[in-house]
Image (cartoon, rainbow, N blue to C red; front, side, top):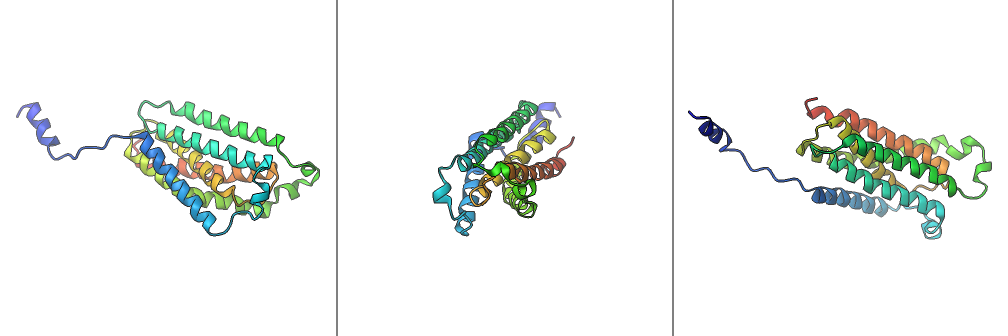
Length: 213
């Protein structure tokens, strides 16, 4: 049997593979995030003073920076699933955007907040609940990004998994930002970072397991 015949026999029963579309994959992530936000707010957990605080620099910083970070990180994560992607550069860019958002929080702190004691500002009991909520809210996005990653062909699955965790953590933090009642940027930086870091670590540990490294 010729090699051409052998190849034809082996490939005759193969189903065609749907070509990847980053626009379609991004739309799926956006749709899931929108549904999660709608369901979360439907439970009546939005902060009650949202109509008063909606235009405040602090809330605009928190929601705006997390929204931009979520969009950028999800885009970088989806792009990292391509074999030709420069995944390390994307992860570094996501980290730089996070650092920029953290630094900008110093300029929106409410007046007099810096005079409070450190433990009062970070409020560990409530902070742990915030970080846990962000982790839980991120899980559906992690699952979706993991499924998209398995259908693709990332050449650096560990870094792609890390990028997916960063993206999912940012999405979960964005959803939670609408109900968090704390107005101290230090509180947000500490506990949102804890929640997002936990998501990124879990994704980095779990998602590459289906890939041969």
